Image (cartoon, rainbow, N blue to C red):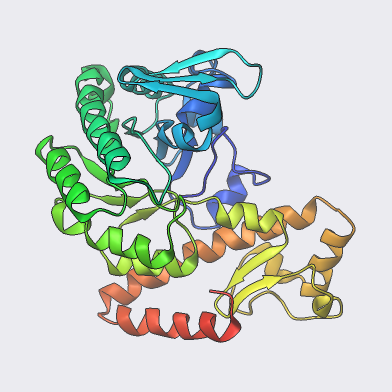
Length: 343
């Protein structure tokens, strides 16, 4: 899912976003509640009309901001009290408030509010955050209105527990008993190594329902996506394709190209021969020129390319699974990325 926290995937118009192959996009409850405010979004027709996107939309609850904006936040059992990073005003986000905002926004999938902490961390902190996340999930489910559920909004739970297998299992089993429509694995990509993250997925997925979507939150190197798919993950989101694109980095099957490097100045090749995106209709040398000249078209084109690449990657993985050759598919890409030194 491309990330559009504030109602836009940066620099990409909706028609261009559709052409990347994206089917679902992501918004953020915390950020949209600050700007422009959920009531403004509702007055403008709801999140789909506001975005201009008619496909599914998932809204994150603001739980990640408990981690990322920790210096501006005070936490207790009731919820999180933020000092707005925009104007310093006070913003209170409880499990009930997070669900209410998402109902007003009108997203298709709403996430429960969870307690995210940094890794590594001591077991007491991890256990407290996990148990609080379970209690908040129960409150979130209870807060959901019949009206929102009747129009199709689904609520996903979020598994916490750090890198501790006992805590991950305990959280997974407790949330599974609540029978949510889908389950996310949260609290990763917050300081742990890639292998530790894979281990955490391995210790979580077996305890989640097999007939419900599994969503790995905020994780998105191409190699991480394939390792997640291998472990049973269905859904992903990450800012990497857009953020890296704005910083002149293009993802390809042969590794990451850093287009500010002088080696691309006279390079007349496209980023990738088989990519249908508009960036690949121009040369690497031209794309480098756009960045060196600070032209806004450069970040736009590389963002579109990276989003297209991610969709091509997961589409290829899906086809490989259907044809029973996913292991080969993953191995081939790993070898290319390893040889380039840029997985």
